[in-house]
Amino acid sequence: MGGISNRMKEIKRRRHRKQKVAKFALKLKKATQSERLVIATKLRRMTAGAEVLIARMGLDDRKRP
Image (cartoon, rainbow, N blue to C red; front, side):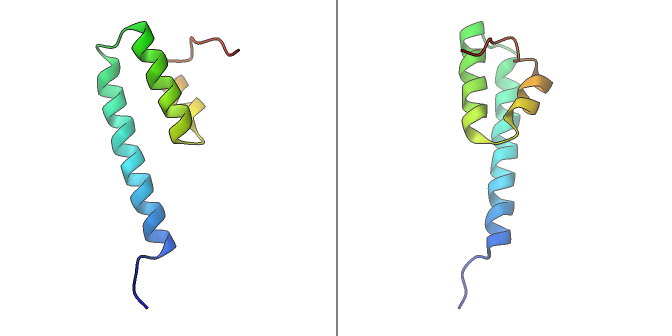
């Protein structure tokens, strides 16, 4: 019986995402325009609510194809 419950797995995923988003926010201070696009792409792959994060960080300058 044992193992990790689904709730604990999701909490672990959420905490890890929060840490990664915090690291991206720190990197944005020195990032060039191309690096900003890469960070925005990574955020889109990482989470479903990425558009909100991208708008909050000021990365929404990118035009979608």
